[in-house]
Length: 120
Image (cartoon, rainbow, N blue to C red; front, side, top):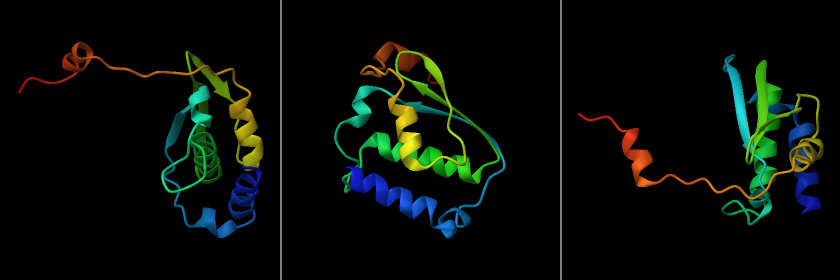
């Protein structure tokens, strides 16, 4: 796991053209990152990267390309996450891991989904 984190940090932090390839939208972003314990389980399809590492990398990319952003973590409630454009990937991961996130189960039942659909 540590080798993957180091590799991602080297690729993202030391390869400026990675960030230059992403065009900023110049919009304001509020990104909510799942900080629950389940984000450290399993891997993203086709990789050995956990969802937590992937979400940290995406947050880092957003912070480095967009001028206006704010991050919050969610598990049972929202908490501010201090992620900025100067942080390395390992620091962003540590920021996310330090939030006391229990396992979060997101569930929608049939009644709640029917209230949000339009009758046409």
